[in-house]
Figure 1 (tube, rainbow, N blue to C red):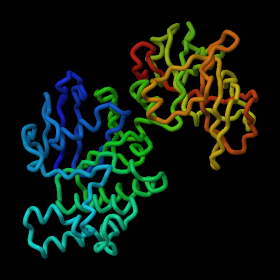
Figure 2: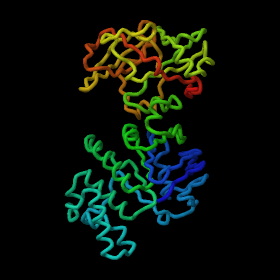
Figure 3: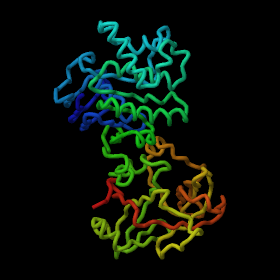
Figure 4: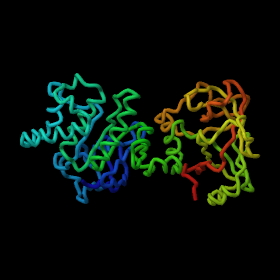
Length: 398
């Protein structure tokens, strides 16, 4: 087993494109580190540099404490699992799993032992004589993992291995890969553009955008304390509602469009840096689950509610996702919005009767009687608001 350390790693292509810039990242032994970000964020390029498939322009890559910048891929002892499986269709499952060992001239008995051990771990024992064409997508993906496992690598690299599977199978395979990775106990770099996949699988998650690391932390920390507007908009489904706002001159109110929320003393004590924004513009973030249908009671405290116009309701069984319009101005990273799969409704960001109206989403109880086209009041958990500098986009937590 080995650690992986990237120090100020950069990749500039011959055409001048800087795909990765000053990437600092440490992956511990046995850790599953997920690289997530929208298309073009540099995550696959970073993975390929670790694999040795892309040259490093500058910076240092270490594995197990040893610099490997100039080490060829075959000498790095890494195993890579691709999204297209890359199986040999004319070979059986057993032959595919043991292929790399045969190339390395392992004794036949040792190959058979390792193949059967991997097959048992992956639930493939009954398919060893089958060809890839006879298997489901999930089974083929497990064969690809088996081929990597038998090599006993120091590092696993996975490049969107679930992207070719249907939604239900992806959920199942997420759990299986996490379970297998923990049993094998090898440092793993896992690339995905799916933030739900990242949140459910990673011990830690590194969020990349335009080649730069935005934040690296545990999934829950990313969700609860995003470092900037991009991470706030990207992590979470539905995405965080982000609006332009102004803190009043006495610091007790937050004006959001045509409405105001009260800033409690407990909130201000917990976020003393907010006092430096008195009378200034900020960006306020409200998670969809921190908005509740006030009609279900109890009545919201004064200064802890927002009036909205309901546009669409999506019933998901255990909750309703309520899409609404609010008299405010949205602040949203377009890249983060698209990558997070946020649904925009046609015409929701429009000037109506001279007022900018912004979209929003709330996650409410299925007991709610809200209807599309109605006016609604949402109680706001003001203690859970997020705040960001309106110019830099950096979070205001201290």
